[in-house]
Length: 423
Image (cartoon, rainbow, N blue to C red; front, side):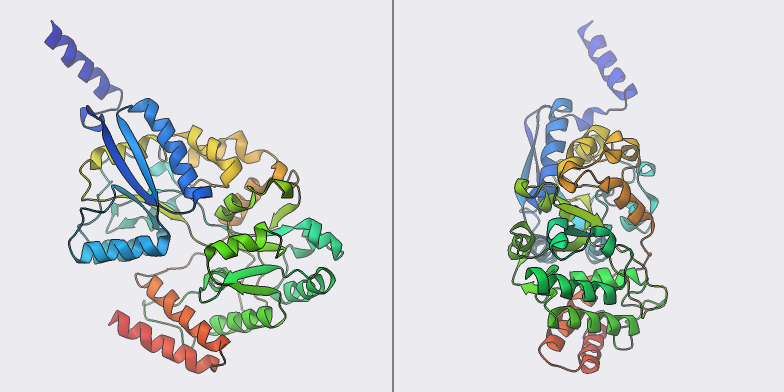
């Protein structure tokens, strides 16, 4: 009789959509590498709490690893075939996913038959996580770019957030110069030697660093040259200040050294912890490049997805964890949205009333409704397999240009470097 009841119990679990393989009979630890305590790590902690009620024997152990360090450790370990120190789950930048899968084709667990319903995610995001028709990641955040600004500082100079909405970079520079003169505050900050702000500008034009055939297009990239000109002017007029690292970048707008920040919507997670600034922030769209045909006020920066490593001792449990949380829990997204700004690409979460609620930190502005609208207007670009190599060569070129090198010669060198890396 006991044996029959056991069989019956297992059948009930299968009918309910579970398999015995997803349930840990013994204490099991799933390790996760990701970055950003206010955003990704916070989301993972909330997901772990939800899954604990589903699979109590599973512990989720989260390690903070900066993206650059994660990519370096991943490449080094996989190249040396030393995978024992790698985690079960990693957070992967979307525009680096295809390159990693192509470089290490057996390193990542195929989630195609895991039971995860990928149709529940925005199609553009799912496509970024597929290689050769296989699903290698569970989509996470939306990287729609925002221009977040301190309206109390703007008001000192006689401006409102509307004055910075649907404008050109020329208008941004003109008004930014006025704000700097009247308040002493630059509008923006950026990390020296990194090209994130330029990438935001670049995608807003619908162009990238490769042509339609996937060949490098840096040396003769006219939108890029215009972007560099604008970037130089931002620095020269002290509307943009450069800092040395990520922590200093965050500190500039948290401390009020600058009047705003321009980044992916996920940056909200680093804005709202400063409680004394509640009510002083608003968001709007980014400036457009008036001298580039087809340029828009919309772009994307970042965006990432969760991957299971093939070397995991418990890949099925890791996949089930992602399925029941990031791919299956509306509650998770309702929990993390208000404080982190984690705009989901999980479609069922978009129906939540949380998305339509006024945000008190942003003066009652319905920021999530606006961000979803921005995301729908972002020009699509093909990042290509060598996206990060292209970004690195462009970043190097920017550093050289800011040090006095001629724009064309720096871009010629960047083109040659990228061609060498590709071929």
